Every structure is written in C-alpha cells, then in structure tokens.
Length: 326
Ligand SMILES: *[C@@H]1O[C@H](CO)[C@@H](O)[C@H](O)[C@H]1NC(C)=O
Ligand SMILES: *[C@@H]1O[C@H](CO)[C@@H](O)[C@H](O)[C@H]1NC(C)=O
Ligand SMILES: *[C@@H]1O[C@H](CO)[C@@H](O)[C@H](O)[C@H]1NC(C)=O
Image 1 (cartoon, rainbow, N blue to C red):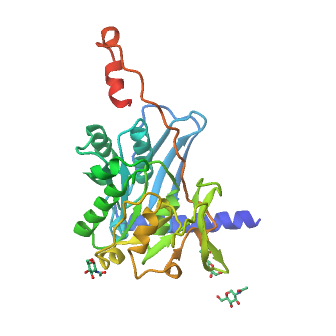
Image 2 (image 1 turned 30 degrees about the vertical axis):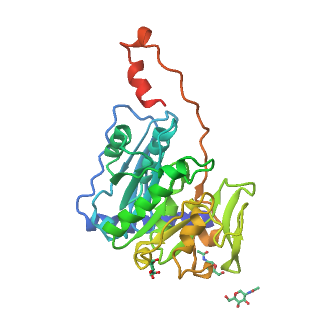
Image 3 (image 1 turned 180 degrees about the horizontal axis):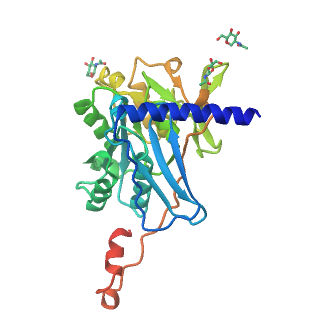
C-alpha cells in the first residue's frame, strides 16, 4: 500500500518535470535508432533533481541497449553550474578501455567539460579520436612528468597533469566545480549532481581503498569528526583523490594553490594549499557520507603483448588491432 502511494507520487513528480522540460525546450524529440528488433523493449525516463532527463531503452534479455543523452545544449543544461573533470592519463594497455568506460559515464552527465591530460610530450591520436567520438566538451592536453621525478622509485604520477588542469581552469573557468577523476575508478552518476553545488570543498566516501575497504570523513551527529583511512601518515587531509571536489571560485581566490610532487601526499598537499581551509569547512555529501558513489576499481595490470608476426599477418586485420593493443 505504502509502496504504491510512493510510486504514484514519483510518477506525478516525474510527469510534472517532463511537462516543465518540454515547455522549456519545445523540441524534446527523442529518436531512437536501432538496426535490431528489441524484444520486450522497455522504455524508461530518468529525471534527476535538476530536471534533466536521460532516456534509455533496454531490451529484455537480448542484451542490446541504446542510451542517448537528450540534453545536449538544452536550456536547462545551461543553467547548471559547469563541472570540470580533470583526468590524468598515460599510455598503457588499459588506457583506451579505461577512457572508454569513463567517457561513457560522463556522456550521461549534463554540462561537463572534460580535461584529459596525458603524461606525454605529444597527444595520442587514439585518445584524440576517442574524445571526438564522445560529443562531450573536452580539452585534450599534455603535461609530461619532469625528468627529475622519472628516475625516482615511487613516482609522483599524475601531478604534472593535474596541475596543468588547474592552470587551464585558472585561464578559462569562472564558476562551477572541478573534480580530479582518474580513469581507473567507477563513478555513480549521482555523485556528479551532488558535487555540482560545492561552495568550497565537498567530500564523500571512496570505496575499495586500502585495507579498510573505504576512505571517508567520519560523521558523528551530522557533523565532521575526523577521517577514516587506512593510511593516515600524519596527513591533515587523509583522503583519496576521488573523494573531493572544489569550487572554481574558491580556487581562483587562492592563486598559489597547487599539487606537490610528493607521492602519497598529493591530496593532502593540494588541500593544504587551499588555505584558509579547515576540515570543519568540508561539505559532507553522499547523504552525510553514508553512501559509496565512487570506487577505486583498479583494473588488472596487463603485460605488454607479444609482437605481431608481420611475415605471417602483415596483410591482415591484426595489423589494425595491434595499434590499439599495448
Ligand atoms: C547533536 O547535535 C545537536 C545540534 O546539532 C545537539 O543539540 C545534540 O546535543 C547533539 N547530540 C549529541 C549526542 O552530541
Ligand atoms: C545530515 O545530518 C544532519 C544532522 O543530523 C541533518 O540535519 C541532515 O539532514 C543530514 N543530511 C542528509 C543529506 O542526510
Ligand atoms: C603566493 O606566493 C607568493 C610567493 O611565495 C607570496 O608572496 C604570496 O603572498 C602568496 N599569496 C597568497 C595569497 O598566499
């Protein structure tokens, strides 16, 4: 009984939002193209708190799914504060698969600008082609790790890239929020809508990390009460890179804020550089940090594949395949 009342209210709210949206943009036309018949196809409209709809068509057990973002350049999207997603990346076997997965997540997020920054001297054409295919707003940049750090046993990976991202934001952005989203994590779409309204610095739990399984601010009686993390190491902010987002305005008011080339202390160093900023100022998201909306998934590392026998296969499809396999 309660369930059906809840359902009814949800349907009514959904209908109201859709009505509102179709008023905003008189051309809310959803066209789904598919070459296949979709037996038991089921249409769903997801409408989040900001009135943004994403339609998905799933096909029963056949496995075929078409997803399309109906928001590109809609009026309501322009009203949302922009999200700048800073993704450091580097050439390795997992690079294209990880970026493919992350790009498909971001394609479902409205008003995103994706900053993909390679630790390389030149841009990878394969990464460039992937970005072109996404229809996302993006900037493809390079920021190689300085040579002096390359010789170290534990390298400060991604620092050069993230600082390049911060520089880009200082030069091009005026409002909104930025987030350091590595390519090897799994992101729940709800995370992006929650971080979008960050005033200073927001934080939330990150799953699958260290021996504790989760890294999170501790919330007691609705307020911040320390950090839970498997590696505190004297850090003032013992958090993971995926566990916080920062307001662009807040960054712009701090011209010296930067990430240090200090393995293990990148997050702490960056958050300290945002002073004045104290743990009590943290905006606690993910329902007072009771939900996990991002996981440090860690794809298995793959070895470099054996070279292709060009005498045997030089005139076959395998030549093309080898170009995208590390
Ligand atoms: C929890 O916080 C409220 C106010 O925020 C306070 O009145 C209450 O005493 C606190 N409870 C405990 C157990 O600390
Ligand atoms: C977080 O906790 C505070 C204090 O208990 C409460 O007022 C607030 O509604 C909670 N927020 C969410 C999103 O659950
Ligand atoms: C930024 O750093 C410079 C040089 O170290 C210093 O002179 C200046 O006061 C700093 N600015 C702020 C806002 O902290």
